[in-house]
Structures are given as C-alpha cells and as structure tokens.
Length: 288
Ligand SMILES: Nc1ncnc2c1ncn2[C@@H]1O[C@H](COP(=O)(O)OP(=O)(O)OP(=O)(O)O)[C@@H](O)[C@H]1O
Image (cartoon, rainbow, N blue to C red):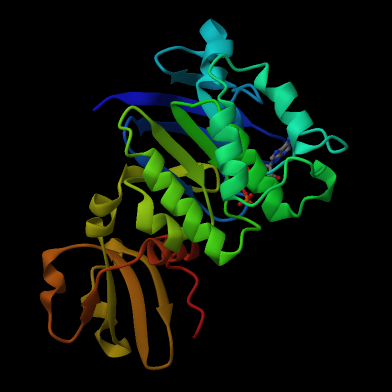
C-alpha cells in the first residue's frame, strides 16, 4: 500500500504549544481522518503539511518529495480546503475562478461549473456575500476543479448544515473510488468521520495518540459498565478513562480476554467514546 504522505518525527513549537514528534502516513486509495479536541494541534499539523508554517524538526514527504525539493508540483497536486477564506472578497466567484485557475495546469472548467451547480452557487455572487457554509462549498469547488490527487481539508464540515454534510461525505466516497487519490481531513464530526474514514489519526495536546486503521483501533478498546463494587476487579493499568457515579461506572479499557466476566457489560466503543475517555483520563472521577 503506497503512502502519498509520510510524516516522520515532526515537531513544531509555538510559544505555549508544541506538536511533538509526530509520525503518520496518508495512504493512497483511502480516507484518513484527523481528530482531537480543541487546541490539540490539528490545524498546526495541516499547516505543516501545506508548508504554511515551517517545522522545527523531522521530515514531511508528499508524493515522495519534500516541499524544499518540489513545492510547486506538490501544491498543484493537492486540493486544499481551509477554514480561512483565501479568495478575493469583492470579486465574484467567476472572477475568483479566473485568477485561481491560472495556477493549475490541470484546471477543468467543466468540473468547476458542475460543482457550482451541484452546490447551488451562482458564479455572479461576490465572495463577501456568501454565507460561511457557501464559502466552504466554493472552496471545495475550487479544490476539486484541478483534479487533485490528494485532498486536504481542515474542518470542512464546520458551518455546514446536516444535509450538505451528508452530501459532502457522499462526494468524498465518490472521489475515493479512484484509488490513485487520497483524502485527509480534520473534523469534530467524529460520527460523520466514522462512516467514511478508513484510517484515523488522533491528536491530543500535541501528541499523536494513534494513527491506524479504523477497525483495528475500535477492536483495541472496549467500553465496560458495571457496579462500583466490582471496579477493583478490573486491571487498573488497562483503564484509559472512567466515569463513576454513586452506584456504577463506565470505563474505556484496552481490550482483553478477562472482560468476559458476567458482572460487566462489555460494548464496542465508538470513535467518540475513544476520544472522550482518552481526553478525560482516569484521574478525573466526575459523577454523572
Ligand atoms: N501562530 C501561532 N502562534 C502561537 N500559538 C499558536 C499559533 N497557532 C496555533 N497556536 C496554538 O497551538 C495550539 C494548537 O492549535 P491548533 O489550531 O493547531 O489546534 P486544533 O486542534 O486545530 O484546534 P481546534 O479544534 O480548536 O481548531 C493552540 O494552543 C493554539 O493557541
């Protein structure tokens, strides 16, 4: 399986935050989702991938090359959807298209008008008059119109209504039918991601918790519920996070055979459970 992107031991330091020693791959033919709580470093990592900021340590290769070697070609092969508006606000969508299309050898007007129509955007509208969701749709239209091999999106679902969110997921699944392509995107919509992603990378406080195949991640953990009196029968070292009440508890554990015990209810976790309990941890025993 070929890696379109390889991130190796990347560190980026901001004043009060650092992204620490991150290594992950983005694989050809698959959708990789990037999750993590607010401030975890998702945007920072994406900015490093796009060389919008410089890394302090480590290496990033895209299509087998670093930005230093071939950044123009790399950027031409990426469709980038970013949460900051980088279009000319006072110009119409058509005018913006004329400008942006000059930067791409593979620009395709037919695809551009196809998505404008599909997203119900008018080429005569000015960018400044678009709603937040419409701006994301326009950004996506531009990103898809130069036939990128890799699509990188930072929070593309923020500001989108649930109907369009579903449509966006369908579009991503359509794109990934072409097994030469890869999609990497960050989102807080973990449930949406769970429906479409093949691989998941999880950042927390600048550290990579895991980056792996979705099903393998879910198999690695279990949600266990039980009576408080039985809590001491669990191996504390396998508990990732726990929520206790006066009577019972619910915990995320590393999956293990000992969990067959009938006094516990054992369930498969969702990605959201894994994220929630990992961030919450086991020292924070709030009641529910
Ligand atoms: N240019 C900068 N200078 C200093 N600190 C920064 C800069 N950019 C980001 N940070 C800090 O880095 C941390 C990670 O921010 P980042 O935007 O990468 O997180 P995120 O996971 O994308 O969060 P969110 O889900 O809220 O968008 C935050 O503490 C933020 O304040």
